[in-house]
Image 1 (cartoon, helix red, strand yellow):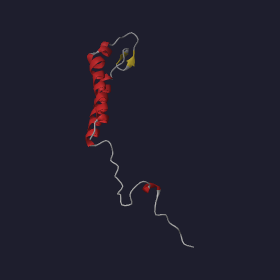
Image 2: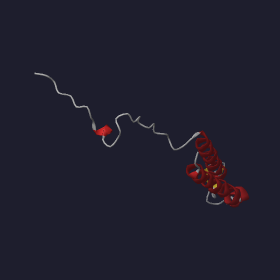
Image 3: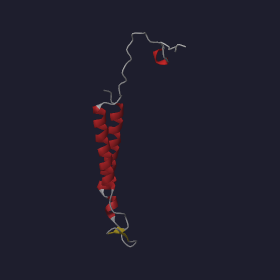
Length: 99
């Protein structure tokens, strides 16, 4: 009994016999990943700038008789969210940028 082999496979369907298969290229290049890391750094810095003591803490301990006005500082209310939004904008740019 001879073993029968097929000359064609499902991958060859619709191709010319001498056609070389194309290599698949990844969509993101080095430039995209560089911009993604920059955007991620902006987001992380923004969240780090938002950190700080709570409204009712003194030296890290809860004290209902004290009030910390530091929660309304320019750094936590304006600058940190701006960094986060800029980071997300950079991420969108990095994803949509073509090679």
